Length: 94
Image (cartoon, rainbow, N blue to C red; front, side):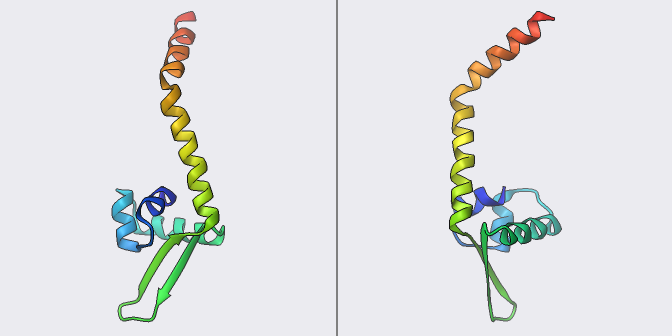
């Protein structure tokens, strides 16, 4: 997820962000970043240079989303054995 990569990496250029995210197409990452910028989660800064230098960083709203998602992952890590136990019990009823 782009928000996670930016939260961990801080301000990143497109290539650095893409490397942190793993296998993602340039087209999909561009589309995602535009939507995140539109939603107010990501700030895009273009520097007048040749070739153009563009950096992305999370805005406060994006950092808040990152913390919320992190909370969900932390909950999942704490409760995975409970979830697995419930799944086994449920599957064993049939």
